[in-house]
Image 1 (cartoon, rainbow, N blue to C red):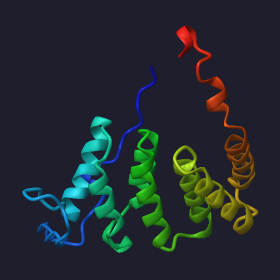
Image 2 (image 1 turned 45 degrees about the horizontal axis):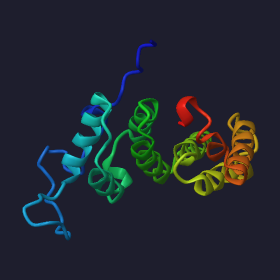
Image 3 (image 1 turned 90 degrees about the horizontal axis):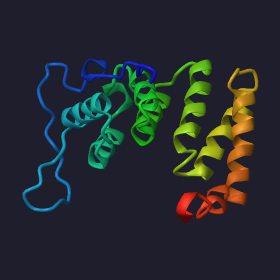
Length: 174
């Protein structure tokens, strides 16, 4: 088995509080007795999930989505690590935050490519949109031909649904 690529850790991100003070959680509707997740807690949950290979909690991802892009120092590094670890929903949040940081053209092309890759399984229509934005906006990018091919593949899968054709064809009808 190949050795796993290093994953991001809490040092790869900083919260809006450089002093290390914990952010106060904003009041939200949640069951009684359930604590709010602060930005610092959310980032720690991402780091822990990346290290352990566990799914990052949805509440932590929602909290991070609400953070400003300037509150993170290296969202692309975190996103790439989460993506390599198979945590596509969590990686998507950080790729979207990196996109908000006004990255250069080459980086923006990579971000669109990876946003499409993160969404390919869970939201194929959104994946196609990201791939098409890359193809239309970054014709000279090395990612453009691959994005064009992946867009066609996703469109074909949406139309033909090959997963459905394979159901029941395995051993013991599985």
